[in-house]
Image (cartoon, rainbow, N blue to C red; front, side, top):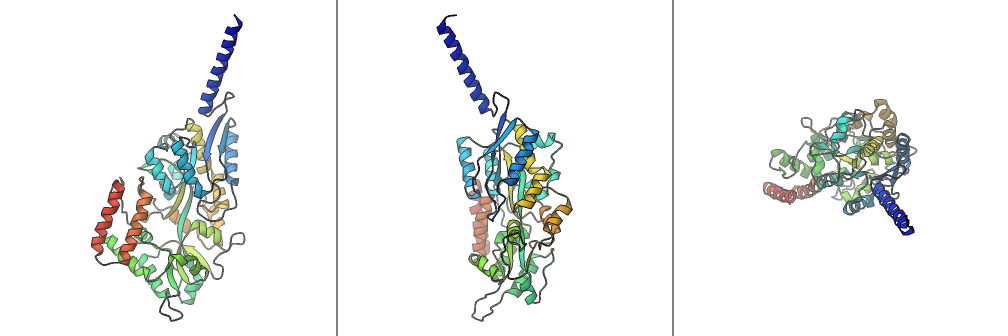
Length: 432
């Protein structure tokens, strides 16, 4: 063989080898058989509260995964704060660089599922005996459903609770409400607790702060949107009743802009509070102390006794990229975060989120012991039904509806006409 032919053969082999290497890298593997999974994760708490654990329990979960998959590397981009994370995800979708596995908040889940960014997980659940919907709290598993199929596994939850100023109730000769309290009882208590203490004609002690129309609608068991996400129904008597009740409630409600001032001063009896905020600011010795000048606890939100009440709160779910080439490995990594008991216990103990697994009752009770929040309360909330069905504009439609309904409650004249107009506006948005 002549020298030129040898050189061309060697070059050809080199180019072929380079092409093979590039193809294998694109597939997430190397010539040594190693594979790489990209993980999309944020830094800090997703709930806008202080969190000091960083990536500790995340790295521990990855280490456990790698112990069972020694030929797989898991990489993630560190330092992305939650406020920047959704934009980072959007950019990844646009660039075609979606991580194999990634977490996402409520407001992005329906959008990504509708755009085909997420892989349908139903086939994985059907063939995997180590993971079942029944492993999770009902509210948690529903948070990852889109049009009745599972497109994400629940990773972390943030139930919505009710802050109760126990000291203020005692001063007024009132008892802490029972867990089964109703919106009507809530309204009556707020009326009793709102006072003009300095007699200047303006209340300076309030029954509630930061409670919105949507809170009351959910407490009354209203299902307002159609399953296909194309319609909203505001014609029922129950919608009118909720709106009129909310108008009465606003008479005993402090300004939302003064929420922190009123709560710090102990001049408001009730306020919706997230589980994350409770865990962060409850006066346990190792937490950030807040609202410490009086006794306070958290209980469940009021709810109608004769209605199906759905979970009120936020969720963080974990999905798989529809374009991943390593579906089985990605599924195993998702299970390490969402199904593994050690990981979920770490979330309970080291983050401000609520675990998604129906864990041993004693574990949650021990963690919340002497905290001012009952484990039974949390379990009852997590055992509520989740959102009936999600669609791409679910979160944004809810926000628009709440804003318009609160304005209608503030101006009750011609309420029926306003409801028709709001219904038409929201329906047009849903169908646009």
